[in-house]
Length: 114
Length: 115
Image (cartoon, rainbow over all chains, first blue to last red; front, side):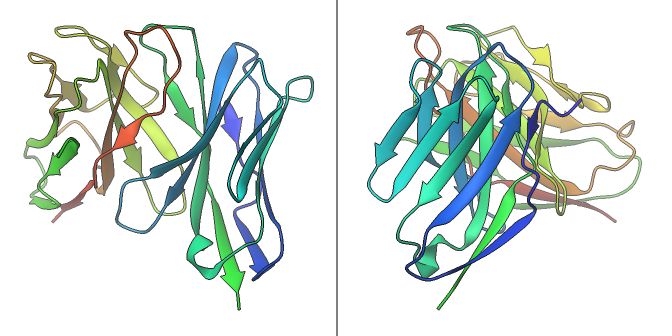
């Protein structure tokens, strides 16, 4: 049962434009959501997160939006840069403390074209 | 420098052999995780541990075993019972003792190939 889904395996965006990556989840107990960026043969690096008590969190060029009623979150990157080309994973966890499972989606490969 | 270290980076195993992947962190993190990534797929959770001497199965634990004898270390053994062990393995850790949600930090991964 895939609790976190990224339905777009790939996305291609022109440099300077906005990149929008989407993620859906099914478990209503999830209360913390994260986005990671990953290059081949490396570990993922943390980008930005959002708690379920918020609907938006911004950090520089990166903004994450959370729509709890739709069980949907999105990552906006603006403006997109060539160095943003990577695989992006969304992740979710449930529980205020304790051994929360950290569940990942399948990833979206973002390609920024010059 | 604080961080999370996985070793080795590349590992080759003959069919039928057990092999152990190392994961060490000096971040004083409570929870540690093992994930597996296959080509074109996401990160699937194998095992996770919140405290020393305690761990829970993830979504694909069959054919794997772990131990958590020290807070800093969470080794993963890929046993001969794992039918398709060739994959990229990632270890992660995060703080959970504060009660607040935090991000997980990842190691650089171990590429395991069965020959």
